[in-house]
Each structure stands twice: as C-alpha cells, then as structure tokens.
Image (tube, rainbow, N blue to C red; front, side):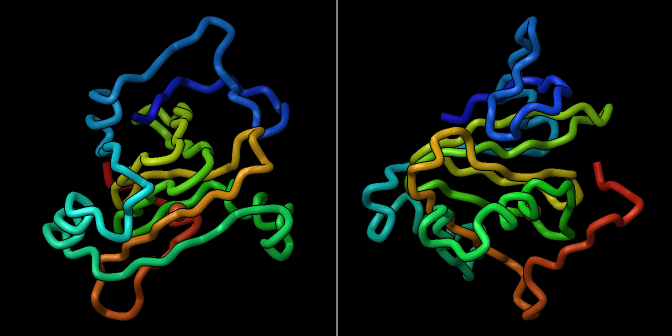
Length: 170
Ligand SMILES: [Fe+2]
C-alpha cells in the first residue's frame, strides 16, 4: 500500500525521501480527501488479474501502456527524469500502476504544500483531474519500473496536458 508524508523543501536530490525533520505522515483518508485514490494489486499476474480487469471495465479504462524507466534502456534518461519532475496537471484523471520497482508521486494539497507518495510494486494510484503533481524515481535507480497508464477519454486527445493552466479543480 502507498505511504505518504509532507515534504521538506530542501534542494537535495529529488530521489531522496524528503521527509520533514519532524515527520508528518499523510493517511490514505487524507489522500482520499484530495481525490487521490490508491489500492494494491498482484502485479505478478497483471495480465490475467480479474480484479484489475474489473477495475478497468468499471471505469472504462480502455487505453493503457507500459513504460519502463531505466537508465540503460530509456533514451535521455536524466533529461526525462527532469521532465517527469516538472509540476503539471491534466484535465483527465491520471492512473498509474507500478509493476516493478518504486518511485514517488508528489501532489499538492489544498494549501499548495507538497505531499510525497511512495509507490512500489503492486500499488495503483488515481490522481484526479486538476491536481498539481510530478513524478520521480527514488534512489533505487537500478530497478526497472513499469507503469500502466489508462486513459478513459475516448476522443483521441487522451492525456491532454495543460501545463501552467492558471486554475485548479479542487
Ligand atoms: Fe501527469
């Protein structure tokens, strides 16, 4: 299951945990109040998992992709990591499912404070449309990370990205 905490604002490597000196954990209920849903699934059988199939059917998650983030296989790896870490939002929900490895999704709360969400193998998360967020690998950089993406928009303009849009839906 995902774990979350409020972040410090040090300029240290983004892949470090960035917990506050006095740790302030964030519960799943607090995440839910922000519209962030999470659950755990059996990543080893994702191809035949009835639970995953049910979630996809119920939510009309018709589109998906697997991304492998690894320094040996991803072109422009360091550059890509920087791009993933740029704060942005979308007009549709963002769904991620970690099949291997681990990483951090950061989301802003209602007061614009950063919450860091640690995800590892089997964790699925839904970030609601309009929430500011970013992604980074953690320090476990030798591990492959596969991420499922489901885009429910049927119009072909899925994953509409709107960086710097001056509003938030929360
Ligand atoms: Fe995103």
